[in-house]
Amino acid sequence: MDNKALVYLELATDQIFYINGFKRETIEPYLNTENEPRGLYAMWQEFDLIFNKTTKIPKIEKFYYPIVFSRWEFNEIINEISIHPKIIKRIRSGQCKILILNPFEGWTWSQWDELASILQTKFNISADGIVFMSGNYYPNPKHKTITFNTWERQIYANYRACHNTKGSSHHSRTLSRVKDNRPHKFICLNRRPSIHRYAVVTELYDIKDKGILTCASSAGYGEWYPKWVQKEFLHNYPELEDKFNSIIMPSLPLTVNDGLDPEVDNPAANETVAQSEKYYNSYLYIVTETFFEGMAQGENTLFLSEKIFKPIVFFQPFIVFGRPGTINLLHKLGYKTFGDYIDESYDSIENDKQRLLKAVESIKEFTSLPYGELTKLMSEMLPIFKHNYEVLKQRHDVEIFKNLKADLYNCLHGEH
Image (cartoon, rainbow, N blue to C red):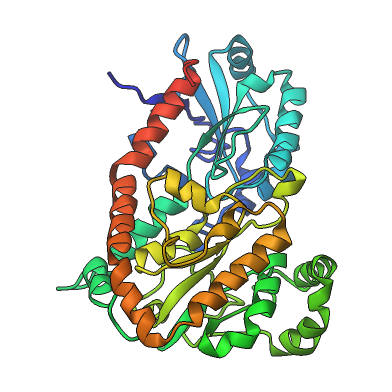
């Protein structure tokens, strides 16, 4: 049985193939397929594995009407969307569902629900006619959701491809270096400023000589963004204001000499072999995830970016500054973490500040160990490293698309 879901793709001369609902002149300013990892065409490179495609509106077969966009862009042009009346008729009858795809991010559902509400009102359709495919692992209480985190696949694929050289694979090279004596006890990379990243950098600054600690000034987001982040950070962490203003701000940007400019470059998906040397030179990987604050206030998102998969690729133990339940989610996906070596109790703390401070405690406790002890622990952790890499490989090769294909089909046919 072919259980691929069917998608309808518009083929009008004034549109761009694969981009439904918008005229070419509307969509082209948002396309940057050469440099932008969210380039819309990249979304379809492997979707033959999970979709059957048609350019003719099906008469009776159920199908999706896909819209691929980041939330920011969608928010700007949603009022210019145009859906053919024949499609609207099929959405109202239950034969078709709008599929909004945004698997590069895990934005909170409240932000997406506003856009869905506009579609419902504009086209007089029900909430059941809209399905979200997102990197958010939390279900949407108003709309059917399908989780697809493209970063989990991209990190494995890109590092395997870019780092395999003649006679040496990325995996074998990483495996051979697990027992290396490393000059840095930790690595904590922060490019885009955010509230929790400013807090982490401020809290860890006193031990920066033990590891690699970076923080960009604006990361190309303009002057307004870091100013807004600083204001919110100081509101949330007033006790850190003096240290931040007197020590951290005058020191920015904090950089590492790896050939990348954090104000320009965004090595989200891959880095060269030389640029990856910083991982082999450090023990603990400190992950400052995309989302940290707000879960206790109802901001229901749980997202795993490329940041969490890098220590898995490079065989490093890690501590995560993310939403509560991040470690637990990794366990559900089949990964193992380092609770036998690192205090991971922070993962269950709902209060943002308390969770952050508890994770900082875990970092300082782990990095207080002598270098020789850390090298010994790396050998003890080797079975976890191997297990996680194999899980990442298996999920890349089989599980992610197998589950995604089933979820899409079942959701469309009322079995979700």
